[in-house]
Length: 194
Image (cartoon, rainbow, N blue to C red):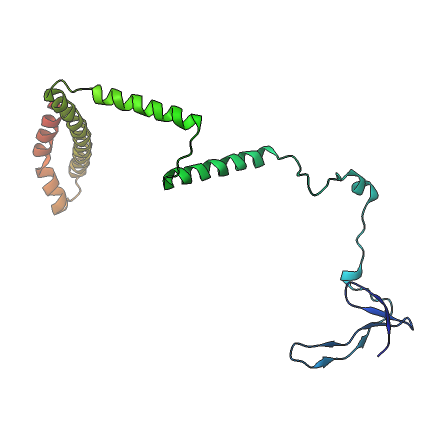
């Protein structure tokens, strides 16, 4: 083997005789890899020096690694969110933070609880009337749906009547629907009357 002078990032070595070679090395299994010559003029990608514009290099701010650059708006927002999340987790786990804001919140909560205990229901009739209004709203929605469905059925039956007047032959199902027309009209009138 020949003695070496210069080494490149790719591992190519220039010998004393100005010959470029990849030096011999050992494989993972223990066998020896031979030294290989490199063609003159060949430069691997690792050895190519990238072009750097001197003006761009001057523009880059020079800062010491100790000093952090100022945070952007989004970085500040994210930091606040993380801090709030940590506080929420601590409160959930039972480690409540003692800050003036928490003390004020505790006072407000106590006041609200006192007000709630002072509120009394005058009579049970008020509760009953509230329940019936909720039920009537639900009933109104249900009856509105029924009315809509009945009107649709009546329209279908009217179309069937038009078919019959035009002389088309009706199916048994269509005849059954036509026989139900008076009942549907009666039911519709009772629902609309309520």
